[in-house]
Length: 155
Image 1 (cartoon, rainbow, N blue to C red):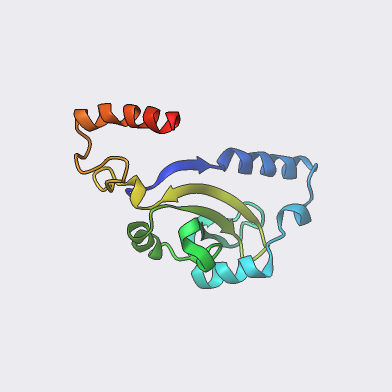
Image 2 (image 1 turned 90 degrees about the vertical axis):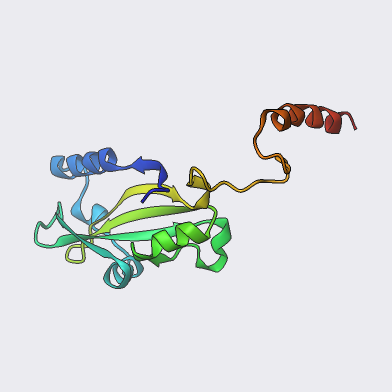
């Protein structure tokens, strides 16, 4: 997605959890604890992958995309399909996406990545705010900005 930014990848954390599991310091029940809500979201809103579950190795993992943001209001925290994200990215200014991998066989789940989406990330699509005025981004309006701030501070 072209507006994806501030990506955080959790693959190192996943490797550490799997290493702890293989060493016996963490039990299978500690890492295979997907809630019924997460499993339902994976069934109905998830995106199947070709990656096998690292625990049971019998089922493929499913990615669930959860969205959060101020503009979403009551929709915040809902699982969305991957096809819905570009449409939301063009209509909303900014929202956070959390991708969780889930195994429907053994209940393994782990946060894969998180990133921001929205119109604010478009290079040429920034809106003119009230502080920029009608002049846009030329040099004269850039010079007037700090002067205006100083005058407001003196009041």
